[in-house]
Image (cartoon, rainbow, N blue to C red; front, side, top):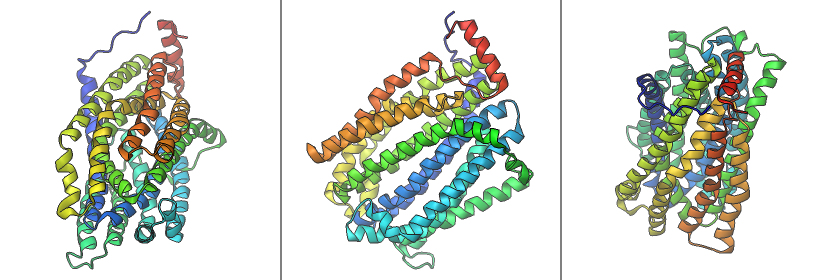
Length: 474
C-alpha cells in the first residue's frame, strides 16, 4: 500500500509550525545579530582586528557545536517524552546533558583564558593577529559556561512548547550587547575605549545577565525547568546507557563536523588574514539568513518527535515530508535575497574604507557563491538534524557528515588551495560542492526508505510495527 501524498491544506499544521518557527527564528536572528554587532563594530578597527575576532570566536563556535551534540541527543528524548508528558524523564535527561556541557565549558574556559596565545596561534602566527585575538579570548572565555547554559535551557523550553521565554532572553542579551559593544569598543557613555577587548567584555557581561534573567523568570513561572534538584540527577545506569546510545552518534557527528570546519578555517586563515576576514564577514550574513532555517528545523524536530513519540507515525511522516520541501525552498529564496542585497550589506563593513580591496572583493565573490548553494546545502541539514534525529535515528548523520566532509571536502579544499593553488573564491566553491552534493543524494535516499523511524517510547515502538505492516514496509 502506497503512502498517501502529504496534505498541504492543513490549518493545524501551519498554525503549529508558525507558532514554533517564529520565536525560534527571531531568537536565532537576535543571536546572529549579537555576533554581527561584534563583527561590524570591530570591522571599523580594520582588517587585523576583524580577522583576529573571527579566529578567536572559533573556540566559542566549536564549543557550541559540541554542546549542540549533547543538546540534540537530549532534545530527541525531550520531544518524544513530551509527547507522552513524562516530565520526570525530561528532568533526568536534562540533568545528564547539562552536567556534561558544564564540564566541557569549563575545559574550554581553562584553555582560552589560561593559554590564549596558543589558542590563537593554531589559526595564524601573524604577531598582531595573535596579540589581538588573545586579548579577546582572555576575557570572552569567561562567558562560555553562561552561553552554553542559556542554550541548553532554551532547547528544553522549546521542546516542551515554551518558545517565548528563550526569545525574550535573546532580545535582552542582544540589546545589552549592542549597547555595551558601542560603549566599550569606542569609548562612549563614560566607558574607556577598549577596542577588541571591549567586544569581549560586552559578550561576557550580556551572556551572564541572560542566564540570570532566564533562571529568575523560570523560577517565577515555575516552568519545566523548575523541579526537585534530586529529580534532575535521579538517572540510573540504564538511563545513562540509553542516553549515550542515542546521544553519542550525535555528539560524534557534531564534534567531527566541527573539527572538520575548524580544519577548513585553518586552510583559509593560512592563505592570508585578508581571506579569513572575508570569510568572517560572509558568515555573519550566512548566520542571519540561517535564523529562519533554524526555526523551521527546530519546529520540524519538535513536531515530528512529538508525533513519533506519541505513536502517531502517519502524522510524523506527513510532517517530515512537508518540512523536507519547505526548508530547501526557503533557503533558495533567502539565497536570492542575499545576492540582490550583496553590495549594501558588504558596504556596512567597509564604511570609511576600513577593509582592504582584497578582503572586500573576496567577500563579494564568496557571498554570491554561498547564496547560490543555499538550497542544496539545506537538504542534508533538514533531513539529518530535523527529521532523522527526531525520528530516533542518530547514527546515519555521522556516516554522511563525516564521510563527505573528511574524505571529500577537506582533501579537495587542501589540494585546491596548496597544490593546484586556485584563486580563493574557487577554493571556497569546491569546498561546498565536494561536501554537499553527494550527501544530498544520500540523505534523500535514506529519507525515502523510512529507516530513520526509531522511536524511544513504548507507544512509538508499538505504533511503528503496525504502521510498517499497514504500508508493507520492511
